[in-house]
Length: 393
Image 1 (cartoon, helix red, strand yellow):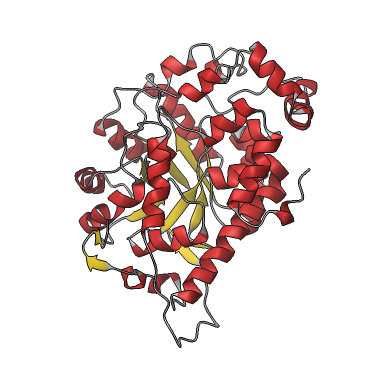
Image 2 (cartoon, one colour; image 1 turned 135 degrees about the vertical axis):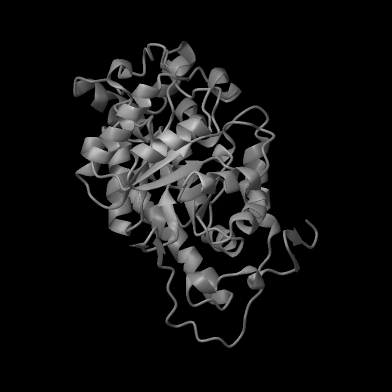
């Protein structure tokens, strides 16, 4: 196992994950779709924004803690839904859940995860459930009821995945879901014995190959088969009337993930949605998608404080969290950052990733003279002209 304490930032964790994981698995996590433009744009959007020091402010009592939907969080961050966690580490979702509970931030469990929600619920902490909508709506309704029975406090419905994405990297690497072991990937596994023995063989020796444990029962086959789940999932017929049904069914916090237009955000308000996740799916769906950070300000302006905005896609530094807060987000979701950590150290690696981001956010707030997250605003930006415009952008 990697000594995660020697990883000083998310990029170090990424490098360690790249060494440990077979190329097919690593690029399934790290790469995206087509020409990789959206991933690059997500990072560029953060990197364009420059901050200003504020001098002679007593920040000795500063805190990065916040509240999300009326409950405390140690950091304005939650773990994003990542279906690949169980391939990065044996029962990786369980390791993520333990880390999130220790760090006192929410964990979002993906529909595509490989650890059953009942096992995650036993960990405790703040738990959110992400829903991919099935063409057979009753199957989605069953998952909603199951999440409610298991004490999940929030439901996040993904609305930006009407069709399967064009992830060419997976085909080039001989890796995909359903998983068909090609010669290329078999050789890849042989070059990464730590992963093969510590992840794949642990599933095999436990008597059950990895499978999507939170799919409806009839689709819970191993990742080797898939039994048509790709066709049944990510319904391209999802409409606002479905959202109304979910609102009626779900008693807790309800969010939509993948909203990138002000008019959609305003419409979500009329359907009683509590929060939206401004996201381009980490660049993993539409390669020409605008960076999430770039569309955040106009959405924040449209809905004001009437709903909670969470920024997803591209967060790799604590300063990214602060920039997102300044542009109107209440918190961020992090997916790849904590997956890298999970891949190299399980719970310890995931916790290391969270603490790295927390420490960096704390330092950024100190430099910019912010004592609480509520003090973070566009005032910390250099070259801010008002509205959505930055000098040079």
